[in-house]
Image (cartoon, rainbow, N blue to C red; front, top):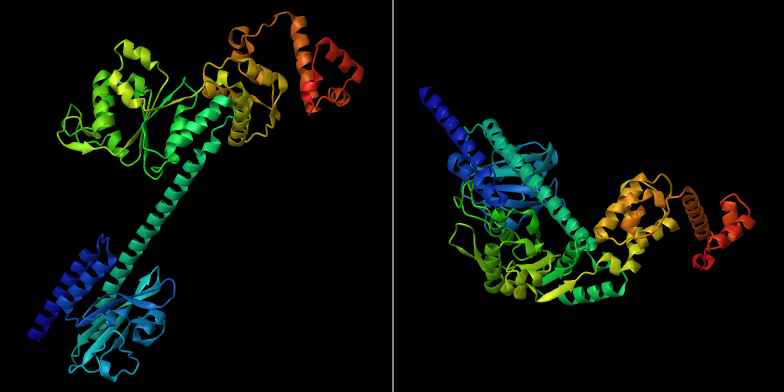
Length: 516
C-alpha cells in the first residue's frame, strides 16, 4: 500500500512539473509550431509518450493536417485526415476524447502517420483529445503510450485534456495576434493609398501658367533622389508640394518625416534632427532616435530651413555631403539613406550676405529649386481654389452650399491675399460656417475683405452709395443666375423688367459677361 501511494505521489509531481513546463513553452510563443514541438517533448520526457501529434483543421479545405509531431518520419508528417475519418477525425468531429487501450485490436486505425504501428513488437495505447477554440473543436492532441494493464486511462486522458486546453488557449492568442497584424497591415495599406491619392498631382489645384511650370518641375524631380529646395511665400502650399514629391517617388512606401525648424528652439533643433545618447545633457535619461533615423529610406522635409542656427547648419551640411552623422553626445557614426526636401519663405541670398546662412549649405540645398508663385500672381486659380474649399468645408460641416455669389467673387478677386492659399482656405471655411443659405454672399466674408485698406478698393460711407452698391450687387447676382436674361432676373427679384433694364443702364452692368 505504501509503495502504491509513493508511485501516485511521484506521478502527481511529474504531472505538475510537466504542466508547468508546457505552460512555459506556450507562453508568449511567437512560433507556434516550435512551441508545440517543445510541448510534445515535455510529454515524452514526463509521461513516456512514444509518438505524438498535434493535428489542426485546415481553414481552406476543412481537412486535418499535422502541425507538430515527435516520433514521425517525413512521410508520416504529411498525413491528412477528413473530418470523422479514423480515430483523430472522430475525436475532432465529436469534440470528445477517445481512448484505445490496445491499438492492434482497433480496426478504425488508419496508420497513416505512424507507419510502424502495425509491425511494432510492443503493444501501444492511443489517447486522442480534441483541441477546442471558442468551444469548437479545431484539432486534436494524439499520443502513443506503451501498453500497461494497470494504466489509469481516465487520469491520463484528463491530463492530456488539460494540455490540449492549454494548446487551444495558445492557438486563440496566436490567431488573435494574426488577425490584429492583418488588420494593421490592411489599415496601413489603406492609409498609404489614401495619402498617395490625397497628394497626387491631380489634387494640386491650379491651371495658371506659373502652376503649369511647377507641375512640370515636380514630374521631373519626383522619381529621382535629388535634394529639392522649395521656395515661396508663407501659405503658398510648399508642404503640399513636398508631400506630392514624396508620394510620387520611389520612396513612397517609406516614412515621410516633417520638421518645422522655426517651431523648435535653437537648443533642441540639433537633438531633434540627429537624436541623442543617454546622459548627453540634463534630462537625457535614455537614447532617442532623431528625425534622420526615423526617416531612414524615406524623405525628410525641413520646413523653414532658413531659421536653423549656424552650428546645426554645419552638421546638416555634413549629412548632405557624407551621408552620415552622430547623435548628440555619441561617437557612433550612423549612415543616412534619406532624401532631403527643404522649404523656406526667407530670402536666403540676403541671409548669406548677412552671414546668417552658410553659403556652402545653400549650394548643397539648391540642387533643384521650385518657386511656388503667390496667389496674387495666379488670380485665374483663385476661383478654382475657392470652389474646392467651399465643397470641402460644406461636406465637413454638413452644409449644402452650392456657389459663391458674384459680388463675393468680385471681393475675392480684388483682394491682394498676403496670406496666400492658406488665408483663402481659412476665409472660405469661416464663410461656410456663417452662411445660412446655399450661396456665399459678400456679407459672409470677413471684414478684412470689405475694407478699403485691405482690399485696395474705394468705397463711400454715404447711405445713398451703400444702398446703390447693394442694389447693384443684387441685380448682378440675379443676372448671373439667369445667365443674363433680364426678364427672368426681374421675376427672381420680384420686380418688372423695365425697372431691371433701367437699373442695368444706371449702374452700367455688362450683361454679356453672364451669358454663355
